[in-house]
Length: 119
Image (cartoon, rainbow, N blue to C red; front, side, top):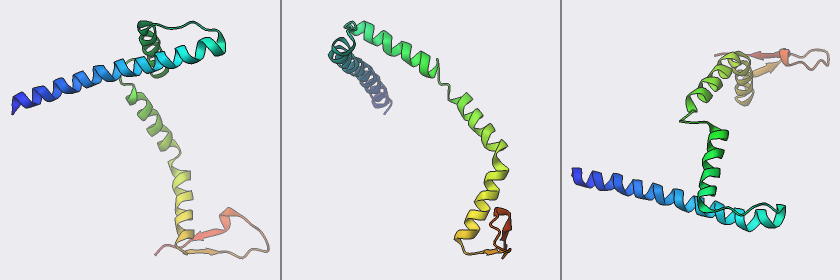
């Protein structure tokens, strides 16, 4: 059973290397087909294309996983904005469930005129 697991990991490794090779080849082919004609740019070799992909990965997403800082930032924003969103959500759900009674002010349209009726 353990031998099969080793083959499985080796297969994923070979598949990963093949995917990187294939993606690099596709990017090289697209670059060489479009950039020299459209912008009079240089043609790229395979290793130049791989270097360009690594550089763009570093510039656009950073080195390493990087998902921790993004999730912490979005969690912080959600915590700061939690009260107004929850108030709006309560009003919306109450309206959708037909549990809101509008106060009839003399032609005044105001969001604060909504009354939330709880059961």
